[in-house]
Image 1 (tube, helix red, strand yellow):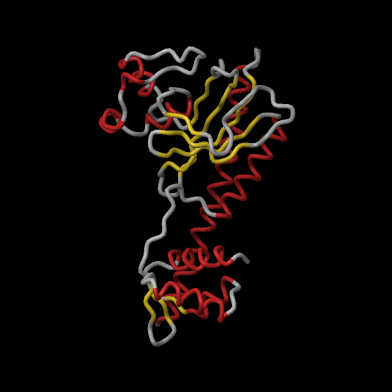
Image 2: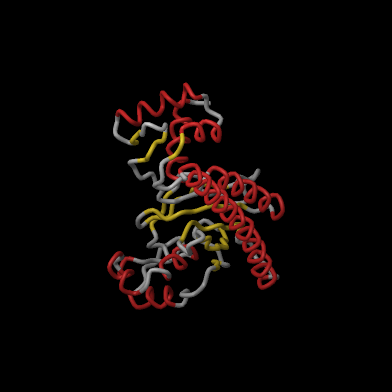
Length: 266
């Protein structure tokens, strides 16, 4: 195992354990790290002030380790598998898109060969929320009017046509308000590169926004509009249910870990 990976694994373990002291022997056992290797890692963390040690070989974390988008390795593996299944089934792109500041950020995207349309949006691509497509509307509608006006200039929103036509502030507000309460939206006529995208919100277990899961295809004429919309919505909702189960399982495992650590202190 890569030394950096081991260090992060230990720090993540300590964070998952909460504020209670943790036995080093338990960390070594659960992570599959030798006691000697764990001692070296703990010495670095102790010397830098990230953990406190007790005389009973317990350690107490003295740091906070958080992700702006809290997706674990297990979750990401499940997400990748689901996205590949969607692409294989529908011959369409599937994307996981997060929000950072005022931008949409493409976390991952499946590939198609040959690509149905030229698409720049792949892992690492960023695009401002000011382009009012389905994802922007869904996210901005969750902010509430006061937060929306505080964070964004309503006079700067525009459509997703090739001309990027600007919206009047009131028109932008109406589009966003029309999306309040929704967790699924789409741009059936396609965007400026000829891509039709269907987007679903995925929340964490506390109801906080986590990421979008999408299906994106070439915006060719379609006579089955309503059937297609309903079918893709079911597909995305089924995928979200699977992802939620992954989060619930991880939550149960974290609770068991905390209980075991607390029992060791008794």
